[in-house]
Image (cartoon, rainbow, N blue to C red; front, side, top):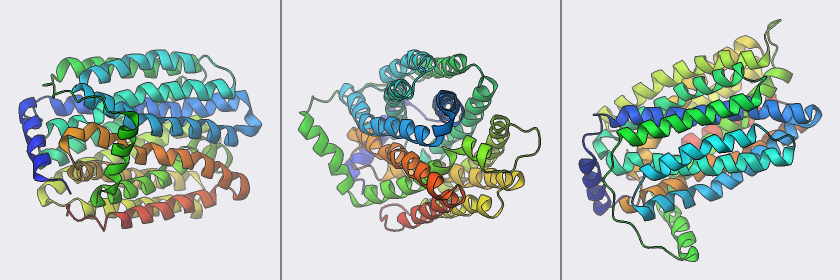
Length: 413
């Protein structure tokens, strides 16, 4: 449970930064949209295409290996990146540095031609993007009062559908020109970083003294001993694992499992499904953020959206067809948009200490990146052994468990 000192610190930081609705919310939207554009464009289109070009026969296993290694690296690096910005007392320099470095990382990724080098290059890409992400994620608990967390989280959440559409459409158009596609996504993040840091002036917090590595590791683990934070972590990890186990293989699912209409390429199908999902995300993100603020309730929204995600993931099991995927995309978008908008607000309310916000949000981001370690390995094993339908069932079960995990949280209603 967040203590009164943490609440006071958050309120002071937010007040010092100015009213969050006057300029900060659009910048949060831009910064997060660019980030999700890169993640979705790379993970959904460019990386699977690159792996398929290298070795089509082993594409499922190789994609699982590359994505899993990169996610493992991201999981380890994200809390470190958060602690670095905490120690400096600044967010903007890390956002700008990570955004600019994304250009070089994507340029490298687009010009390698073996599975090993793709894995190494994508790990570098994950490193610079986690520097960007850890600092950007901490802006909400730093600068937004508790009463406005829902609307601020909605601004962050809206970046998911907008960024996903931009990233997937851009990547689909440039799927036959991988190097240009990767570079375009890197430039998009760099531009967003410049816009954000130019527009969102910050009041530096007092820098923190350097801690020994052992103490840093102990501090990272200590936050998981906090009851509410731990359950928030578990709930997000379960839903994200279910989501990315399926979405991470969407291109291959459309190529090998779904009955597509004649003449419809899998890459084009992804570009059609993504905006449909994005519309659902946009509607539910706005509604979830505003209603959760007005009702002063977070847990019911998180639980319902997790359960709805489970329903969506079962549709392609019973209807492995193009109409079934269209229905899946629409319902899954509604579920995931509401979940991300409200769960982000919920999580910021269970942070133990405001002064460690970036570090603790970095630990929470393990719940985003960590499942992507298990997801590719488990998904590739499931697909290789029993096919794609059990993969959807697996994802649906995890979403149900994610909905149940929010129940033990005590400090948030």
